[in-house]
Image (cartoon, rainbow, N blue to C red; front, side, top):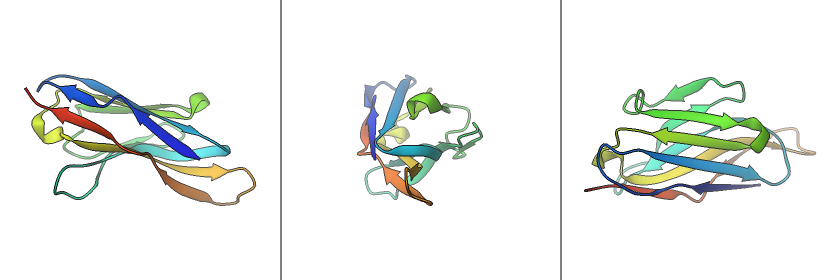
Length: 120
């Protein structure tokens, strides 16, 4: 199973960006999907997560600015980021709990990370 993230880049303060992450491989089902981020010199932190049923969870500092969504048919999770500020600069990692065919348990997977830089 692989998670391939895309959509990072340079954006000006106040701007918007959309990240996407597609899971591929021998996937039976995906439980939670979401995004974490890690800024330079800081620990990785949760940004947002979404269950297979569509329930969402956000870090307090992102609630109201970021929106997480998913397309279960495409095994893809999205992160719409609005009102970006320099403090949002970080490497964003997608994350998923995946149940593979012929396995009875879920496994945690991480994408490779995509850099988001907010700067004028």
